[in-house]
Picture 1 (tube, rainbow over the protein chains, first blue to last red):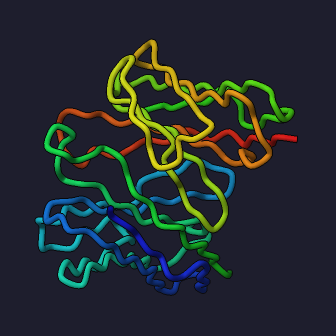
Picture 2: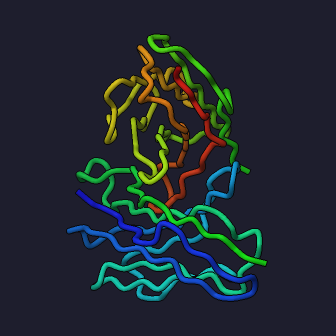
Length: 120
Length: 115
């Protein structure tokens, strides 16, 4: 079974600075997808960024970028120019690339989350 | 915009009560999911459904059941609520067809307290 590990329960960053959240995963599959989700306090969880395992190029979305190291099974999230609105729980998640009738699953496997505080 | 709504934001029930948590999505998504979120444990999948009347157990199905009679609605049922089911419950939906990495869209959550 796949597992996702976020080793930093809490992180803090100064406004305008850069912070990196760590995520490692364990899988025997070669085709899969990785996601970072953000859950602001008392608000809905939203997708921040996603990465297909077959792509070597790291995904970027404005101030958010990932460092995807497939061999090391590492998928870290970098937030540049941190803003107060970035304060949230961040979850790393894994999904199999195989469809259901090929033994895969639509389900996401989540890490335990990292609480990010942004200091003004 | 995709909208996933849950029937209650906060719910307080008594031990032994039958509890229904409702989730509705408005984007004709095939897949729907129920997660439980607890501090320090992240999100854990309870059940998911990939079509009307179809369901599969997730990682922690014990004590729960689900119902999907219509495509847009996915209900989570606690047959006899217990205090260890006090938690935040999140519903999500996802389009199955199209891109393989279609994202899951989440509802606002229901914080359930069982006394």
